[in-house]
Length: 382
Ligand SMILES: Cc1ncc(COP(=O)(O)O)c(C=O)c1O
Image (cartoon, rainbow, N blue to C red; front, top):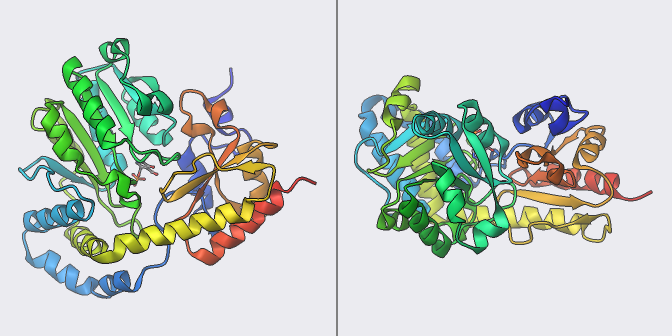
């Protein structure tokens, strides 16, 4: 039998996307991971210059207060006005993966099966599977087009959707969320969302909490500051949940951590305020310009295509007609460029990711342009 490593990334030796991202970490031409690595804007540099003050503030003021302010500023910046403010309803974690692990463990206490969007970032699937949950793939086209089949909802304890999705950038609209929440409520199924990339896309910034609460569904949302701002991975993942969730998330949270650093909470507040005051628009323009560089750099190559024309996420997939993503990854490596072959995003059927490569856009412009030139060279038929 093929090992998972071989099945996912033949040739690289990696067993998951994060291992491929790890190989890229020290390269100047790292366009592999989706973390924010673009240069700070002038407004953000000012916050970094104020770090000693934020440290002092973190020493002096109660962490509960700092946390409340960070949550309020973050949610407000992203149009989430009806988020829960009662104690324990927004659990601040070191990262969204920690929030995901807490949710996975909690789900395993009530169900053995989860319907998960397909494709999506593989660590979501891996954390659910790591807690012995069986997964049912939820394909994006039917998910966005229609109600879910009743047989599916009768067979799972949770529906999990990443919106905007990574790597495709597809967003669940307000109307789809309303219907999905209504369906899940009627079937007694928990609805979980990972909204880590919503900061990039105004179409994902309608008030999800208002819709979820209006439906009576049991819901969980994983929010993330980590993809947005180039804060050297100082970030917060938030596990936000409904009052009626009925899962031991607070107990499991306390099994794993006490809380995140008050310094990071202070930074999240300041970066959120900056985002609300124009930083988010600036970020959208920056990512759109980076995306144009990629698309323009490859536009006339008959060997490539744009699979996600509507995506506004900070990642861009490239369709490759004549080579596999893994072959292109290997060829790019010779130019010291590290992108991400997409097989493992298709956690239920890796072969469907064979013809795509994902590039990270949240990077400095000059190295990204050089990466695109190298990619063009590799993809030009000889
Ligand atoms: C949709 C999504 N959720 C969660 C994560 C995990 O984020 P972190 O590495 O900050 O835990 C990622 C990572 O890229 C992601 O793409």
